[in-house]
Image 1 (cartoon, rainbow, N blue to C red):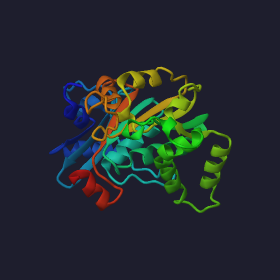
Image 2: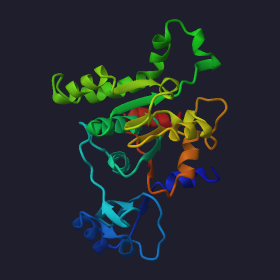
Image 3: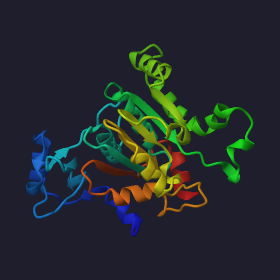
Image 4: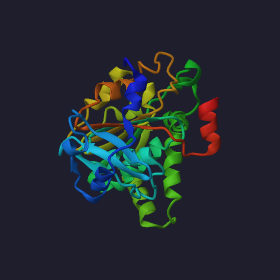
Length: 292
């Protein structure tokens, strides 16, 4: 990745002093406005997200490369979770768009990467055969899992706890006996919602799967390629992570698989990258992420 900051910042663009009549036009046309009218003379490639502003007027917009239109981006309720800012709205848009088969969501801790990906997966559970949530295991202090006590599940479960925490947060949005919670229970019982270490999912069939890879900054570019090239028909892949928080001693901010992914895939019609800036976990978490 030659210019990582550029690669991150181009995922969402703010445009000031934008034509107010065009902002209104995007609001009024649900199907979108031809890109030539919105950005005349510009050669735009891939799924791009914009905050178009002029004074008090603004619109969240997306360039759709398949239809070659710029359309308004909504802030929908996704399985009990509402996007809290513009970047989260863009992430949800990419996560729910069936034409975007590969999504990268980067951002610091507490920006909602995993939560939005999981909520979007549950929202679309009828469209996919399985929902897989996986994360690479990077052992602490360079100790292999074999050093830890217990069977394979007892060794792995502590590493998966953040994924279970996100699932628990979604479940608490609803009454215990709600149809949403019953759906989650059914999916888990039937092993259609699987939370596992990445190593254990690699050998499985990846057709008609909504596949979320968490902490993807701890993967090498080769590992990311290996995972994506196993995608079968009807599969959507989501890679989330924070390129400033790498646990592997062999990777850095530029050489990790997540940075490699959004650098190489940028401009492709079936790919979208959204970088989340604003922490939404708590003021304390946000402050620690910025200062410590």
